[in-house]
Length: 396
Ligand code: HMG
Image (cartoon, rainbow, N blue to C red):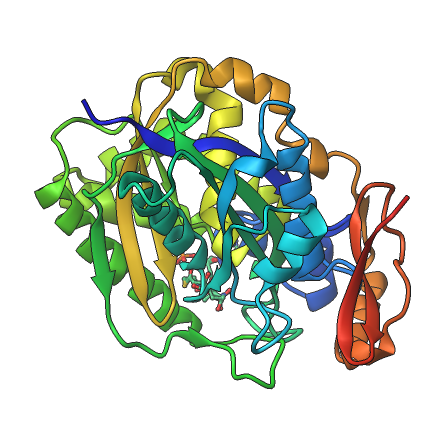
């Protein structure tokens, strides 16, 4: 019998503040319904200069490792999925390795393909364990991103920020992934990209929606050919904004032969619980799918133990994968103890003036920043450059 491999534990991190999308709608002269119902967005996390993708990754990972049942000395692989790296060469994984005191005999690197980098890390970690290379060790996979588009552009209400840390192991306590039976899809498209000199992404919004749906169609159809038969109790999609998951579900269920009405009727049960936490932070790029997984487990692990969940990951450019997992027995009790939404519980609602000031500060070069800002005790912060190199500290 093959030993199950998958997500053993999960932890989230988010910046301390967010923008309410009704405030943004008012400031931009847009009916709030366009953002709230039209795009299905509620709040978007806004990162301050000290809350960079390294600090967010370290906050999620240190929260994960604070679980007393996790032995950091057994971590043999650390992969960070990100598309908003802070250096063209040095990976976030290297800083993470140092900040968290991971074992020296470990492999640590970043995986990059737009929003797909986290899934690339997860699937690589599963293959690493399945191949025997892990020799009984575990893998840490962290997704960390800050999604930025130009102010006043159509993409503005679909920004966000945050990080997710996943521990991947044999006999996982949360979600066993069905290894070797995923459906893949790739194609060279110019739907979304970020030139090396820019912090803000460029996007052909309507094309990106179509590319996402084409990739979902391709990956899902392939998955249906190769995966074991059996129904999916729930589905988690990459969530750039809530409405996209609704469009995705309709598209996938059409392939199953459902009418649009039948697909829409199944949305509340099959997808909506996975959208609660993504609606708190907005698009977290690599982390969006795993915020959705955390949201689903937090809301419904008790009824899903032993049941199968579908996962769809999309990275612009593009590559995509549809795969499935089974919720582990005991996952509900573990999730209750993890208090997954705690990092989202005491955040500040920024005014439009504060949000725009944060974005203006973003245009300053990194060497202009000094200090740990308002980092709370225990949180990691980017504190500026020293001899040209980025420095971090954990606030006391
Ligand atoms: P837009 O110009 O706001 O689009 O751009 P729209 O005018 O078509 O309006 C959006 C929806 O609001 C429509 O509904 C309207 O009917 C509705 P839909 O036809 O889609 O069902 N609407 C209203 N509803 C209620 N009350 C109203 C009202 N007015 C209009 N008063 C777009 C939307 C998503 C294109 C834009 O925000 C954008 O460019 N976002 C960034 C790109 C993006 O998120 N793309 C998603 C797919 S690609 C992806 O997921 C990859 C990504 O995560 C990056 C990566 O892989 O790394 C982005």
